[in-house]
Length: 380
Ligand SMILES: Cc1cc2nc3c(=O)[nH]c(=O)nc-3n(C[C@H](O)[C@H](O)[C@H](O)COP(=O)(O)OP(=O)(O)OC[C@H]3O[C@@H](n4cnc5c(N)ncnc54)[C@H](O)[C@@H]3O)c2cc1C
Image (cartoon, rainbow, N blue to C red):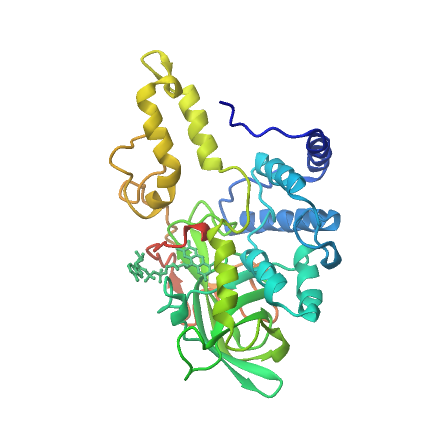
């Protein structure tokens, strides 16, 4: 039986068009693994520029409605775009845009016409990048347990609280976030979603080094997330999306998109790498992929892959290309030097939203290693 997907004629023609365009527009070094903050920033800028070019063609968010700057493309063409960018080691968007992907999907479902007109075009055209701000120190898996508040005061909501494990390097323009709008209300009936301008006064970002991360925040040295503090941030009331205290319904849209892989339909590169490994590695004079005993193990990899990120590999599976379990992962290379805000390039500092490196306390010894606690693996 043949399981391989085959393109129809229109898809083949579109693939040729996309391939030609990408060959002309994807700059060298865009998928290079950065070793330092500066390299990471240079790669990020290339990715944002490519994003804007893709956005101008409607290829950055190909499923977004045309009237809001999306591509308005059908699934046949979206599959081709996803496959062709994945072939080059890129995604759509080619930079970390969690708030754009899941925020735009939620706004399409829950936003007013005016909000769609205001929020969607800059995302779809690659003019802004957005992060999702869900997790709090006491609310991870239990998202309904968030404690950060947004209290109505005339034309604004006043936001206070803290979000953790957010984003990547190089800041964002907007934050897509869930906050408590009725502190006395019942659980699930007390939250609302906001699309917040990240440059508002009162927002502070504290970098958080990770043992591992897979967005553009990663360098050879460590991965990068952030803690975001809100101190009396005055957010215009028309940034609340989906109705006050109706946020748990909006959350169901957001989480549905996130749990289905943020809407991505591209091939899994880990799976492809494993197949390539099994084709080239020999066992008893034959490629591993031809060994019948290897098949159950190979087949167990895909569903087990996510679990391996947080625990040991399944007992019956010892496929050699499997991701390394945390117990055998080599120790991270950590810089021993002191990191100080003054020694960092100005590019790490946003003009209006103060990015403090290190934390408010002053100088710390880098990195402040945080044990990764993963549950929502699709975020990685
Ligand atoms: C690399 C990385 C990137 C991330 N990126 C983002 C981001 O961009 N934005 C964002 O908002 N968040 C982000 N997160 C946070 C992520 O969403 C949380 O880590 C996740 O939701 C789990 O929450 P927690 O870490 O508080 O763990 P907890 O919720 O405290 O869970 C700890 C353990 O308890 C288990 N557990 C929890 N509840 C139950 C239960 N009821 N029954 C049984 N077992 C339970 C969990 O399975 C887990 O093993 C990121 C995290 C990581 C590690």
